[in-house]
Image 1 (cartoon, rainbow, N blue to C red):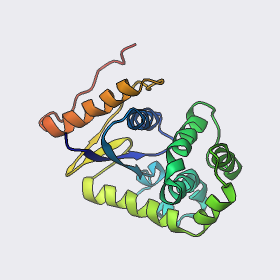
Image 2: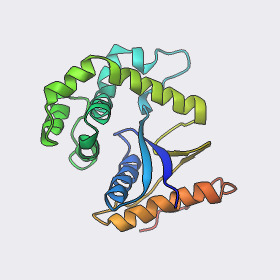
Image 3: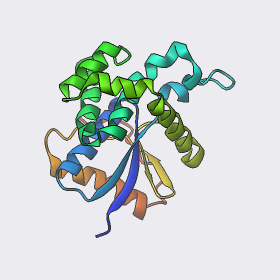
Image 4: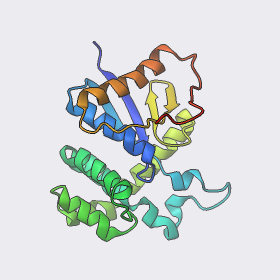
Length: 201
C-alpha cells in the first residue's frame, strides 16, 4: 500500500484540532504509514478584518503566536521531540486551562518535554519560526482556501473536519479514525458536507 501523504492544520486554541492531532500522533505511534505535515494556522489572523494590520506585523498580538512559534522551532530543529511538545501544548490549553500567551507557561512545557527552553527561545527570537508560521498559513489560504482548523490537505483537496472523540490510548482506533477521513477525501470527493444536526452522546 502506498504511503499516504497529507497535511493537517492546527491552532492550539481549538479543541477539535486537539482531538484530530491526538489521533494523528497516536496513529503514527501505532504504525500508520503516513507522511504527515503538521501545518500551523492562525485563527487570530483568520479573523483580522480586511485592511487591518496582519497579526504577523502587530506587536500587540505577538503573544498570540508565541506557543505555535515555539512548537515550530521544535518541529524544525528537534523533530524527535515535536510530538511530545505538540500534545503537551494542546493539553496545557484544553486540559489544564493554562495561558499559552504566557512565555513562562510555554517554557515550562518545553522543559517538561526534555528540551532546553533557552535554546528553543533562541530559535524563536531568531525569527525563523515566525517567518515559517506566516508562510505556511498564507500558503494554506492561497493554495487551498483554508479557513480554519483542523483542515486536512491531501494533494489538491482540502477538507475541514471535526472529530468529537479523543484516542484515549487506542492507537489502532486513532489510526482507523484518520484513515476514514483520508478515505472520504480520496474516494468520495462528491460528498461535500456531512454534519450531524445534534451531537451524539
